[in-house]
Image 1 (spheres, helix red, strand yellow):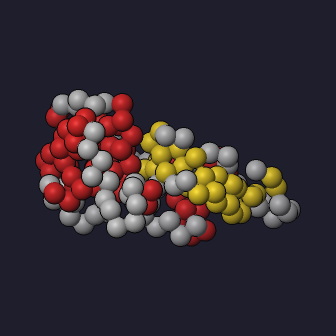
Image 2 (cartoon, rainbow, N blue to C red; image 1 turned 120 degrees about the vertical axis):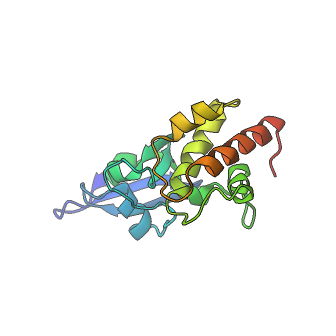
Length: 168
């Protein structure tokens, strides 16, 4: 990251979903705004802007993070994954996305991107999650539509498929 001008713009360069990207940001620019407005990655939703709802969750260097609490300049040199990066190839859903579709684990879809990003990271290290463990983990996300039952069912289904090594 380097300062570009006296207007306090900084060049920010990082990897987004496997592709090198760059742009200019003020020191106070939130990652959510940078992703959506500078890079056009609109799958990352802005909800509460206080880190409470989880709609803006992305992965920074493999760890879930709230993009509304992260400054764009903080991710310079990092590897980011947004919901757009979940699909294994165009036109094909990831295991967790397919499980969400199968179990009707979304309604309005506003919270879904953040939940998917958190579960994608969680299921890599928790291969046999129980329902209570999933509910506790998901307590950092607010969904006003589903009641969480279908989300938990989808996560359990995805975990089983991932254990089987099924990459469909």
